[in-house]
Image (tube, rainbow, N blue to C red; front, side):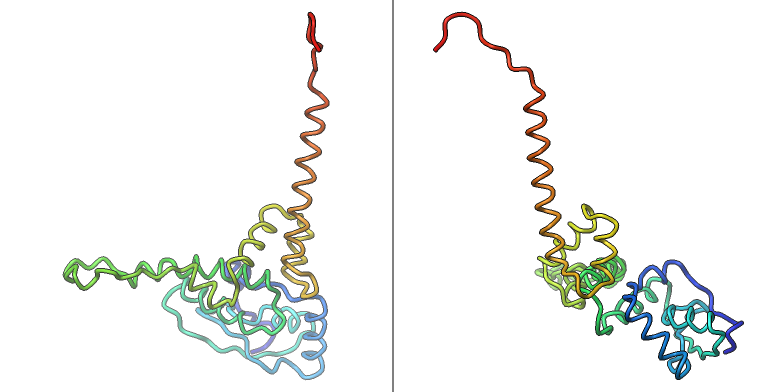
Length: 212
């Protein structure tokens, strides 16, 4: 497909893909410039579901590429495929895996509800003891991340600085649990300093009358 006939970009699909580190992106660009875009870009209904970085590189360097169309039932099924496809990346960070697990759990939730069904024609004795699918548990298992790692990711996500969030997602050399510990230590220090300042600001009245 000529570079002028680019696939459509669906922001929802694009945002599911963790960014490459600067080193990975530089290496990918060098390989494509030297050897061309050997792997076809994957689309669904004309929208790109795999190959966003390759498309950007080919567009900037005016290189040709091929596309292959996949069939999905709906947008949610396409999202599940995109997320699972990212788990195969070799240098993906632990934080990025946790982020993908969180997104996969959200995408699997409606599927789990649909699979469970609401049929009333099945005798209750057959459904006794049936355990519904836990989308969070399934997603964490597929991503290969522990409960502790998910907790560390959520702490960085909610309490970390913009720089900390960006680094744990894209830089394999930045350890998620180390950053989470730094944030915890910082919060404890801030809480202590707040209490000291608050205590110093209070007016301490000297009691009147006889006292020891």
